Image (cartoon, rainbow, N blue to C red):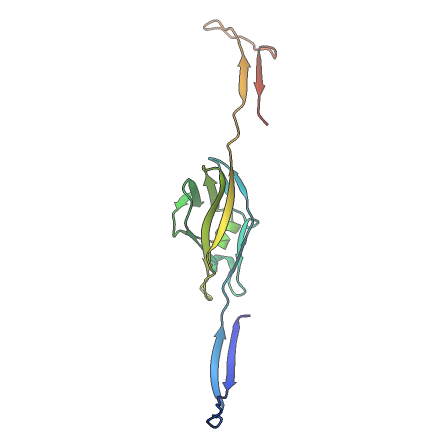
Length: 169
C-alpha cells in the first residue's frame, strides 16, 4: 500500500564488524489500476465509453486526477472528448468517462484495440494496456417494395397492400 516511514539497517560481512544502525527513509507509491470489458459498436456509429466498460482507480486520487493517455489508435477508429477528436497522445479523465463525455467509433469491422495507460499526480503511471472494442457491421436498411400510381398534382392515399417494408431485424 502507499505510505512511507523509516527503516533501520545494519550491515555486516564475515570480514568486518557490524556497522551501527542507520536510518533510511522510504516512500511507497502505487500506480493506478485500470480495468475494462469489451464493448461493441456498430460500424460508423459512436458509443459513449461508460465507467462500466473502462475505469481506473487509485487510493489517493479523485476521478479528475486519473488521466487516461491514448496510444496506437487503430486506423478507422476514433475517440472523442466532448465532441473533439482525440489523436494518439490525447488524454481524458475518469471524470470525463463518468460524466459521459468520452465516445468511441469505428468503421473497420472486428476487434479493434487501442493501447492506453493511466497516470495520476499522486505517483507512478500504469503500464500500457489494450482496450478492445468489437466493431459490428452496420445494420442493413429497411427495404420498401411495391408500386403506387399518382397523378401529378393530386393526392393519393396509400393502402397496406400497395407497399410493404421489410427490416432485416
